[in-house]
Structures are given as C-alpha cells and as structure tokens.
Image (cartoon, rainbow, N blue to C red; front, side):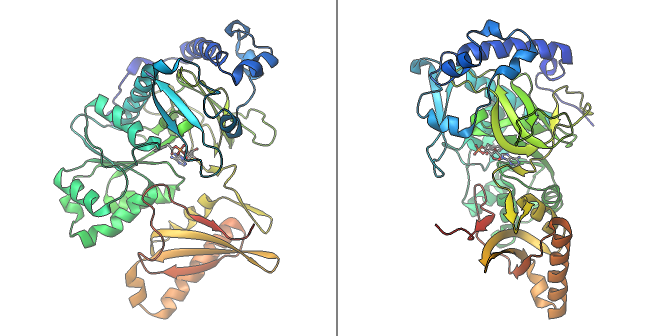
Length: 436
Ligand code: DLL
C-alpha cells in the first residue's frame, strides 16, 4: 500500500518530540486563555496565574474541564482572546437546543485548520487528480467550509455543492467525474437509492472514495456503502468547538481515526468520575485545542464516547488513533432501565442484507413501560415475495436486536422511500415518551 504524507515530519514526529511540542503549545494556549473573561478567573482559582505555572505534565491536570454549558454561558464573547480586527471568521451553533455557542478564528487559525484537513485527505490517498464533491452544507455548519480549504490546498478540484438537491448532485457526479465525496452516512445511502431513477448507473461514475462523518454510524454501514458504490469509505470526526472536521481522520489503513496530536491534546475520561482512562478503554473524549488563538478551549468535554487504540498504525504516523464514535453521553437511551446507544441498533440492522438504506428508532410509552419500535426500509423486491419471507425477516431482525440490546423491540418493515430523508445530519431517534 502506498503511503502518502502532506507533512511527513510532523505526521511521523517521535513521541518524545511530540510531548515537548505539546507542552510548549499548551503553555501558549494557557497564556492566551488567561486573556479571556471566562478562563481568567477559572484558571487563577486553579492556581494558574500565568503560563509558567504549567511546568510539567502533572500541572495539566490542574486545568479544570470545560463543558458545552460553559461555552453557552460565554456567548457571545466570553471566550474571545484576540482583538476583533484579527478575527476573520466565526461559526455559531444553531442554538436549537439552547443558547448558541460561538467559535472565532484568526487567519492563522483558519490556515492551520486547512493544514490539518490537507494532512487528513492526503493520508487517504487524495491527490490533485481528484475531483472532490463536497456535499456537506456550507455556512455556519463547519462540514462544508471545513474540508473545502484543505482540499483546495492539496489541489483537488473542488465542487462546492453543499447539501441537498439530490438530482443535481448525481448529475454533477456524472458530468465532472467526481472521485471523492464528502457526505453524511445517511445522505450517501439516500443518494444510492436515487441513482436508478436519475438514469445514472455506477459505471457512469468515477467514484473512488467517500469521507463520511458528522453523525454516528456503524462499521456495518461503512461496509454497506463500500459494497453499494464499490469505493473506500473513510471515517472523519470533528466538532465545531474544535474547528470542525479534521480532528480525527482515517488513513488508507482504515483502522481508527488519527487525531492530530500536535494540535489536539487527547484524553479519554470516565464520564461519571472525570478520571482519565488508559488506552483501549471506552470513555468520553476530552480535547484541548493547542493552536487556535481566537478561541482557546482547554480540556473540553466532547460528550463523544470512544477509545484510544493501542499501538502504532501501519502507516507509521505517530499520532494516536481513536475508535469509531460509539455514541454520546447524551444520546444514550434508557429503555425500561436498560442503556442502549442508537449505534448498537444500527450495527445490527445494517448487517442484514435485505435491509435497505434508511431506518428510524421510535420510543413510546405503553402504560408504564417503554416501547421500542424500529422502523426499517427493506428492498422493494421483498414485497413482491411471499408473506412468509417477510415474516421471517421481521423475526430475524427482532431476534438479532434482542440478542444485542437485551430489549425486545417491535419491528416495522417499510417500502423504500417511505421514511423521512435527511440531507444533513439525520434524526434517527424520535422519543415520544416524555410529553411536557
Ligand atoms: O459535525 C463537524 C464535522 C463535519 C465532522 C463533517 C465530520 C464531518 P458539529 O455539528 O459541531 O460538527 O457536530 C459534532 O457530531 O461531537 C459527534 O457527536 C458527531 N460526529 C462528528 N463526526 C462524527 C463521526 C461536525 N465520524 C458532533 N462519527 C460530534 C460519529 C460524529 N459522530
């Protein structure tokens, strides 16, 4: 396997040199954080009055954790560390679930972000011969702009289409021979289901790769997309608080996402106790952005659950890898007392060959008990078969789900195209149990 690098020196930096660089950058970041309304009193209270109070790695643990609620409290400028004239861009969250959050960027911040994206996509084998169709939304959502500048830096031909308008997306894929898509897992499955009616066949396309992220998906969904399109799928992780995409990305080996540790200090903690966990242990990812100057963020609790992989990747990059995101501390469902992550349900249904490209999870109250209903689209040819086959398929899905999540679900089988479609992040769970 050919291994390509964008910045070989930093991507293969030895562990000791990486530690030195991280500590230097951590001090710079603390110094910058002390300029913000939010961190100044917080850090002082923790005994950190200047960057010199961070002398060794042990001092790092003195820095308190930062949460999403802290970020909300800081809106709009409690975390701004530079003069507004040095800010070239800001991204806010939608605020649909409360006060919005905002992240500011200087010109260097944006440039460094693009460098990280350039490293990431080159690690998958992207070159200036690729045609990159960016189907992530542009605008406040960081998916579109986030990959855009890195892709241009590497010299790919970028089609800045953004999300939605499936017919046109397919047409562009064909007309310009797109080789790489950047897209959510739910949307790429939808695109596949629409190829037929657009009169476009796989042989008309030059697709080689897709970067999938922005929402959780299972290994079985990756396999499904790879088989349906005959392409390689790479997992891409990021969050707007840490710029956006480009935090963690799979290389050509596709065995976990390298987190760019010269920029993101990576920890996994026990979400209940806050205690740091070792490698290979599932917990909440905590990140510190070591290079962003406009909005420093120290020990940020992402609420994403994953584990740090042990050992070195075959690509020789020294930056550690994290597993697929297994769920979020806040998307865990408690169904009749049993903890279930939506990703566990997806993992099961996507390994069943007759299952199509869309599903939804419904939760209802039945008396005092919770009822789990899993609605699944299956391929239309199933509906022309006999009833017994459909019944057998339904029982198989119920049984396999029960074996995996312990709960006995109700399963509904639906025709293709009958469940809601999402062009951006999918809303897979509809929880009707609590009516306010
Ligand atoms: O979703 C940034 C992004 C855009 C990442 C495009 C990858 C590709 P936010 O809207 O702030 O930013 O949402 C961040 O999405 O905390 C995770 O819960 C989830 N997420 C992102 N990537 C993945 C992934 C963007 N590969 C939140 N797998 C994060 C699972 C993901 N969940």
